[in-house]
Image 1 (cartoon, helix red, strand yellow):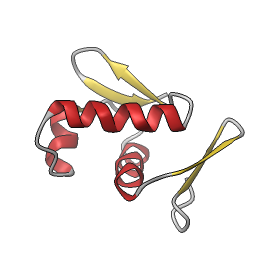
Image 2 (image 1 turned 90 degrees about the vertical axis):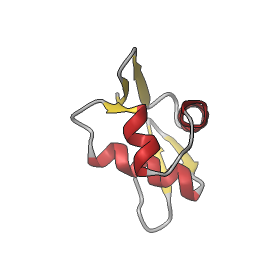
Image 3 (image 1 turned 180 degrees about the vertical axis):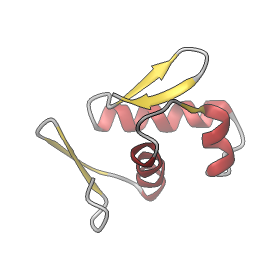
Image 4 (image 1 turned 30 degrees about the vertical axis):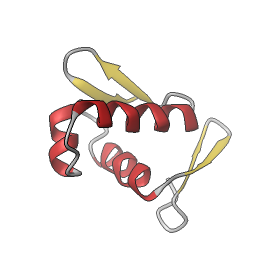
Length: 79
């Protein structure tokens, strides 16, 4: 994760991230040893509903080869 240029390189691919995508992904890297709940993401980034969290995660996953894993009923974690 390139903090200065907000670019992620993963498995030979590079993705330029939006500011919100970058913030969320950086949060996952800071918490990479645990599952992060949807509620925690909503609270941390002032997101109003779970659907918006799901959309943000899906956009990140499509940009970076599904680097985030859904832990059913709990939240998400880095693979």
